[in-house]
Image (cartoon, rainbow, N blue to C red):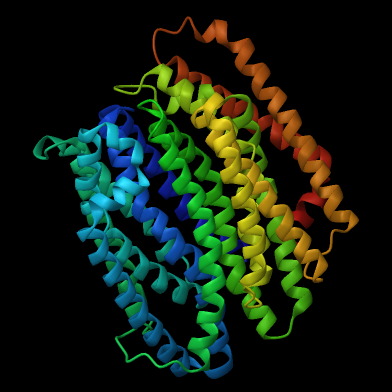
Length: 509
């Protein structure tokens, strides 16, 4: 399982690295002004729907169902099931695409009402979103192919696909002079990326002889079971995306640049979420589904515990860094070109607020896997919707005094509510045991994080006078220093707290 986690995580890390290169270009070319705000609305809209219909709800319902049909009835039955789901998925997404393209001005008026006072930003957002929205159809099919390949324990293609988005946008931005604006160039880059990702996954699925075909839908027991799981999962994913929609809607009423600050802070926050949380959750779900299908309850629980420990081991350094030195990180990453140090400061404060909820962000995929693997998508919805309700209520309470930082803080609190409720349900149903070894492990990770945070803050403070004397690249040098200090301190803390034997047990489970 760890080899597969490193496969997914490695490609995801490469995706994040190229993504940062893409965001550096975006920041330098678009900055944090009106064109950037319009583009980020155009980028967020298909991504919100993707999270609802594709990576969120669909994966949660499809992967266990496909694994069950494949394990119980064989490859032929699994292929027929995939054909029927593919046909239904394609038709519904095509209808959604046509409706969205026809009524895009009305959609933008609802989702970005603050643009009504700025007709130029509103018209540009409509134009750019019409370019980016077909990406949703393509990436939904990519998710279907990726889920089928994951059940076959083939993770590389699906994990590598997002790299195309970054490379395509960078290429388009480098040719921005040939487009009406840099926002148009970036939007076309998104659409081209969708085509490339689709071709990559379709080719891999065809090579494995599992590429689904159009088939007349038939509501047999397998399809009905899939939809019974899909309904609650969609409701849960929709609740989470409603909270993110609320961010976009409220931020359009704030000063220009608020949406951009949210975007860049979220991009950094998504690094550990994608490389660690989603990568581990992606591998864990088919693994637990396979073990539970074979009746190995103890093995499924052990896999989840190992996933928790490994997630925390890799995530704690990000939490410590984002909470203690967010401004230094933002300046080093993005403060150049049209993106000013003031923009970096606003994004850094937003990143620190997001970091308060980073632990639940990275753990939630592994936490809900025990329910999804049992085809129970309803129970996590109760937790998700409760967290969303708290999240949205806090957004309206905090945005007045804290602007976009309040939006990020509300998201973090909602994430904690969601995770704690999921864990509580898992303990109640006997899917998880909060035993002493787990609690001791949590305490050790907390101690290591506190030591690391103190070391990072102290190093940044003490090194500031010396770095200020550098003629150039002061922020980059500061970040490099903090990375070295952080690696040494965290490595020493983990080794001291867990010991060699404990570390081996942590890795091997």
